Length: 160
Image (cartoon, rainbow, N blue to C red; front, top):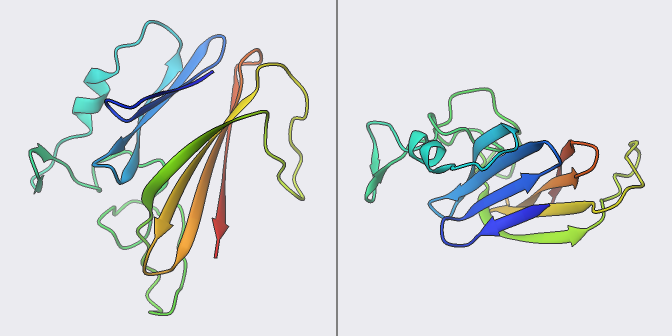
């Protein structure tokens, strides 16, 4: 089951025994909050843990090098290993994908050329759309939830 809480911009993906949660921080960045045992989970303590650094951003303190990003770009202040590096017209490889929206779909997505699970009941897929305006490039993050199997599948697609 996939749930979205509009008030705190949080996604919760649940299977029979597990839970995966992330939020959209500052209306821009998908930030991981929790993955583990499914229970009556209060993720507010997780949200507070993402807001620390020496660089203030508005009312909260937030830094990309401390946030557990769901998908990190290159050259944006997150100094860990990047999820993606694309060389664009500026030839520097920098990318900053910003959240644009989401879609919750019934069923799973087909990944051409790769094996994927085809059957099951209650399967849902969450699509997160991100955009880099310098590269003029879309990035889609997919989370497919197989609730009865305790499986959550993640994949990404770049569209140029």
